[in-house]
Image (tube, rainbow, N blue to C red; front, side):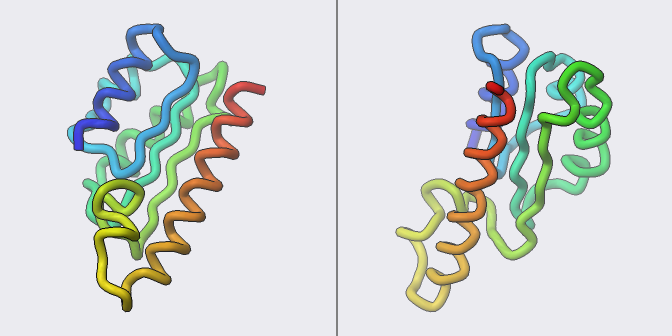
Amino acid sequence: CWGGKVSFAAAKSGLVEAVAACHGSFLNKTDAEETSIPMCLLNSKDEPEMYTTDIKPIMEGKPLFAEKNGVKTFSKMHHGWMGTRGVGAVTDFQKEELTQGFAEGVSDLVNFFKAAFA
């Protein structure tokens, strides 16, 4: 689960124009502080609280693009619900809720990237 960390590292490098992390891992305040492009962070219920309490305010304080940033917590989704621990990896009774969470996450990502590149 290094995808979120890698996304933010790419953001700091200047190689990309916007980044998103679904259930990101190993993020810290410096990752957000050193980023100068739009960022989206979709958290599960399992991510550290500091992603909301510490990283979100930094993202909201970016003067040139704060309105394009997004942080959202999916309180019913487990870590990995948008990836390898998602719909195809769970039992039938979990699939409907996960399918809905996945569809919402994809919609959020599409809307984020549309706004980021507008």
